[in-house]
Image (tube, one colour):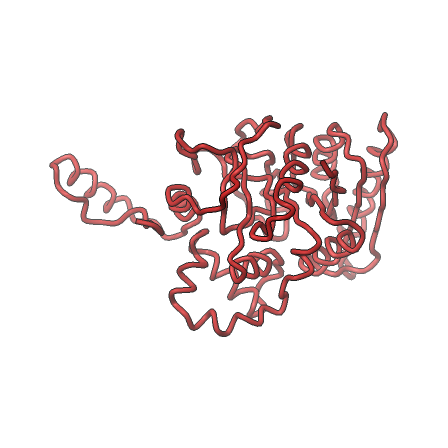
Amino acid sequence: MTTAPVLLIVFNRPEHTQKMLESLLVQRPSELYVFQDGPRVNNTYDLENCQLVRNVIEEQLQNLSYDIIVHKYYSDINRGCRDAIIHAITSVLEVHESVVIIEDDIVTSPAFLTYMNKALDHYKNNMSVHSISGYSPSPGRFEIYDTYSYDVFASPRLFGWGWGTWRDRWFAVDWSMSYYDEFIRNTAQIEAFNRGGDDMTTMLIDEKEGRSSAWDVQFVFDQFKKHAVSIVPCVSYTKNIGCDGTGTHCSIVRINDSELCQKTTLRWLDTLYFDKRIINLLYNTFTKTRRPLWQKAINYIARKLGKKAPFLIKKKVYA
């Protein structure tokens, strides 16, 4: 099994970085790349906290009891969220065939690196797989049904809270989204793209029109155009500790604190397909439109009376 280097993307959050490193370094990665974007112009907070992040990294690495290859790139200029991440991943994949990417607010299971390396190795020759996700939506929001036969599923949506990809996929991405104009005029294609949630096209439009500094939606759009998928674990190997208002794209939300997956022997999905029950569940997990309580109440009464519920609460991508 090939062991991919781990890329850490950090910025100005020393406490998050500390927790991320503590969970990662016990897994004994063999090679580590650290990329830190520079402080924003005339921003004293960034200047001070970027230095604190560097101090955390140096302290954690000095205390290791095993050998590790470390490459550190501390930028003096601020590229911004999108360009900094693309630059970091591109730089590593110019040297390596694959990479595992972790941002500063991601805490990982002790089994995370084993899972990621096994998955990257298992799917490396399957060009229909564009990425490996370590995160899966929290139980309570997203429950895989008991009769599903695998430990991973094919997803139209990338979960970037601890993930990996390969050089040949990354360098083939059309970051200009040249297919966008044709796509946005085609209702059927928009519906297909939204199988991962009805926010997908909204994020794509925001990115195209300059209202977003994200990078992942372009990657997923390229995946969609090539009829490819992301492989996602049924139980998450990671959790995000940064949804506390400190991040660029994460507002203050509650993340389920369920136990992270410890499994290292997995049942792989070798014949790739979208399981309609999982896709319907995924769609509804990331669908913003919700019916009001009074409609849910009427549906409940109708079902109790043996009649058909008049309101559609959950929309199905696949009937």
